[in-house]
Length: 296
Image 1 (cartoon, rainbow, N blue to C red):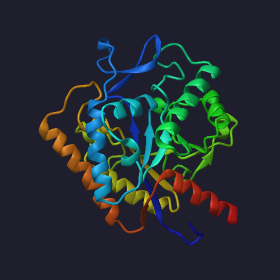
Image 2: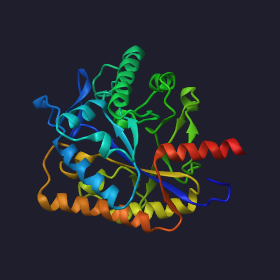
Image 3: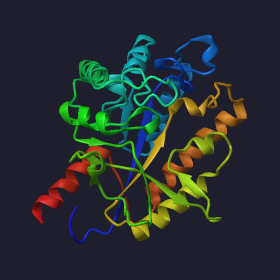
Image 4: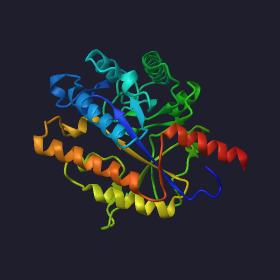
């Protein structure tokens, strides 16, 4: 990344966690919906992840994989050899058991010691599985507070990617320190933006998979960002399970599953063809950004 570089950088990130997971009143960890069954399922996650790996390989895209540690263990137990499948991608952390750190739904906010033990254990598991340094973190439900950020700093994370920031409101996709939490930890925020009708959109692709958005709206958003966020990072995020089940845990029909895969492939294909766009992992973007800042 140089001063003359006018590219928009795009990252494809995956939140790899249990199928249709949901926070539960009275407990810290998440369950798969419907929560009345008290189950943790990863069947849809496994199928979705396999399909996404195929597409990433087809279009020669390096991504960032935010693994929930419990899910990584369950996928390996199911026969997936994740170290090989994830070889070209960044390994990042998405908690131990998708905890509701802030207690928004559980009603029992976690204390600093419990948060630290949980994230430290998650990081330890991922290092053991992948043998790689874990630099990035995305919080369950993308919710952080001062305590979570403090723990991330103490555990040596280089960046967080949980916050959402709106493009065109003084933010142009650049990393920023989490000063609101009295921290110098860098944030690689998820962008929000407006559609053609002025309605707010998120870069999470769940709305496509549930038939509420079309893939072209997300490509339009990247085109807009390319004009206003040069050298910035546009982070897409995907839950692999969402290719096969909805947020309530209901199985999609064959036609919906096929459309979901086709829509995701269309996004990857068009991103690869766009001028002024560079696709890279979040850790690689962070490295390039810091090098540029150090050279100034």
